[in-house]
Length: 269
Ligand code: DGL
Image (cartoon, rainbow, N blue to C red; front, side):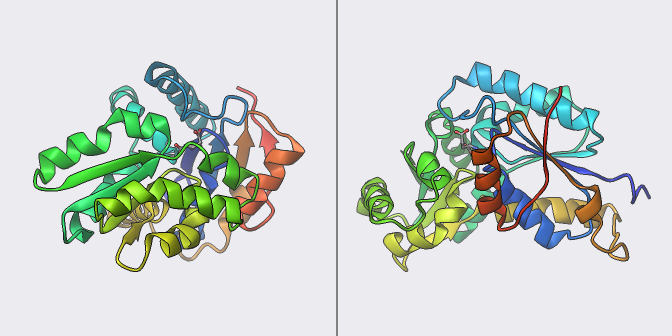
């Protein structure tokens, strides 16, 4: 067993992927993590698939160079357009936020109307529609790009009146078609989960992909006999958090996302 050498590499377009880190830390408290957030080139969600794929290759190479043995694509915009390329190009296990949340959404919906909110890149990729059509052709997916939500979360406007108004407006078309399940298809949305859930109403089940991907990684490590429960709080000392641009703002946002202060290093390729 390669217990000590196992290192989970997580990447995102910026600090949003820390929502995935938070879930991983809670499920695997003793596992060293390495995080890369491409804050110098964020956002990805407004960029072309070609550019996102190129960035995703570079981000993965960075993590591998720094010792990652498992890769987690925390960014939905990347997972929607670059998963296939990364899986073909790299031989290590690659996890991503889309498949586990899609599977759970399919299991959860009763009326067969699922809603998806995300960035434009994620919604335009049609990745959910394609795969849902293959697995469960009787299920309908209704997607809504919500480009204003990322900056609102980064500003810390999590419960403000304006944020509620915008969420209400974005969710209206989804409520009109009576979805009963809603996928939070962006790293930032778990911070808005409570408000989204309140506005969506009790009849709509919310799927949080950060929890689902963390569960996938946990299962993978467990099935491969990688259990280091005897090692206490290793991640505290061995985990590393790299950003391609570090500013007081990114540090503050990172603390908000994780709910605790971390030591951030500037990534040097
Ligand atoms: N991390 C991105 C995502 O989950 C949101 C921010 C961005 O657009 O880069 O799609």
